[in-house]
Length: 202
Image (tube, rainbow, N blue to C red; front, side):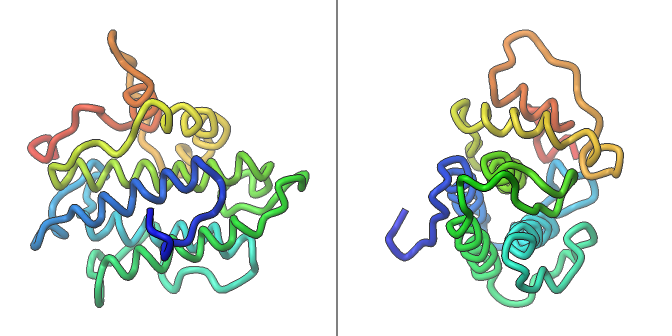
């Protein structure tokens, strides 16, 4: 990552931010309307949602304004440069997490239980960025941005927070594991995603 990119100092979050950054940069011209693993959502919808969630985490930590739209009801129309939208959101998130006291007992988060240890909170923010990086990459024919090393801490925090969110509709039902699943496939299936999803399946 270049020196001009804000980093949070939390390895899992910085890795997930970079995964989202690379996935967005890989969207081809005209690719924003492509379908994604998120049923009914295009690449533009997913980017808006992912950006809004990063801003939401930052807002919970700093008290600064949150996103000026509902991340769970994105328009699918991006005014301006999509990359600029993403970079602004990632920068706000990274700055917020960089200021967190790692010795604090808990920090506020926008997702249940709304207070988590700093480590779990940063991982929850990373989970959101990482899984949506995968959504965008799969939609646009790119390589998976998730590695086993990244998937393991993301799965750990997913098991802490996803069930209440699933009941609210933020995640689909968990998919049955398959022989040969690696850490990435296990994470994706837990989040209700088919590791072998392709645009043709949408």
